[in-house]
Length: 88
Length: 423
Image 1 (cartoon, chains in turn purple, brown):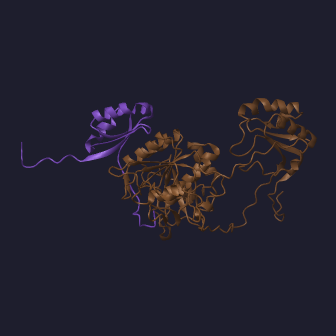
Image 2 (cartoon, rainbow over the protein chains, first blue to last red):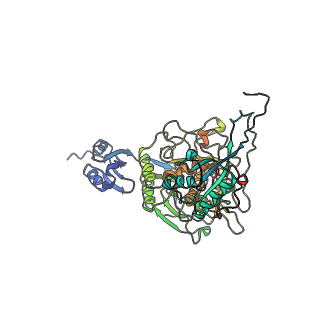
Image 3 (tube, chains in turn blue, orange):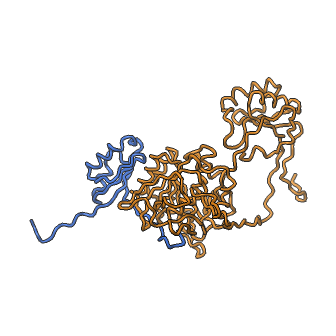
């Protein structure tokens, strides 16, 4: 092994995967297939038909190709003003 | 012929000898005795048997326009009364076109103000006048959590959950407790100011924003999923990001929530600086087409300086407005109360009113959305800022009135407007 330096872990992104309406009753199944396609599952939202997980950015296309997937989007962050702010 | 010298009148005048028979009663909570089938099958036979011509009967509307004398109407009343069928009779009216407006309506905007017993927001949405409290309605507030030990909420039905790693559901910020106070807090307090629109609602406090005030899709969507699992009628989200792009996960989430009878209401955003010529735009997730976006009004019912304007594109509109400037509500102890501004404060006003309307009508999902818009008070403000206008609580349920006596047909005693209003 080359000891000149370790390869840093590839950057991981949290994705929100929305399953197709036709797969609403089979969210777990889709989640399983997503896992096989490289998604580390964080949450399966059975009522909404969404799966939250993380994967390398480069793996997005492969995940999007999983049967039953409607869309895959990187997670967003939301915020409100600090408590001392008068405008919320 | 149009006579410019003749003053136009919009007063409707009765047509002699002509009456409108309205089957069923107006307003929510009306009797279900007259379903579409009865209007189609039962009523025509009865009208004919009473000697009325069916030409003027509109079965889909349950309305008959008839020539009649008061004696004949009295008999019809008696028959309906004996069969327990709700109906009433008003004179047929003749209407005229509306005259052109003669100038700007100088309707002085009502100025609301907090009183020792109530906030201006409660007054503006007519919460106190409503007989409804949101009893039996489950309201999820997805925010920074809740101070469940707040004394104003002792004895309330509260369910909490945290979707923030490493934090319990306690509100370490204040924003969540404030929003829950506005939507579901006490409307009246002994010797203190009431501030809650729907004090009878069950509270589902989902913590999706950390004590630092930030959160991510995964927590927010998990919170919506949790609210759906609990079959919440309403989800209130006073959160957002100032991004113009519609975020697809919330399109699916909003649509699927509506399909399950859950209405998601979100803050339009605070990115406007209207005084500096910047009207702002509705951000995510409120810009999703299936999520109701709420703008903020001040106590003059003017659009708040910070309240975001409709974003062009599907779903980007402001849908309704609520009180959002100088809003007094609960805050985590020991501070107990705080007065702040934002579309975050307008949103729980809308959510609380939605809970009252839900209780009053039984409507959920898309029907509840429509009811909120239909019942809102129109404002003389741009639709891109306030849309349907100021959310309004339902009026108290009309007491069950006895069937009118057969001896008193007296249709002229009935107000001609009586079947236009909402109870």
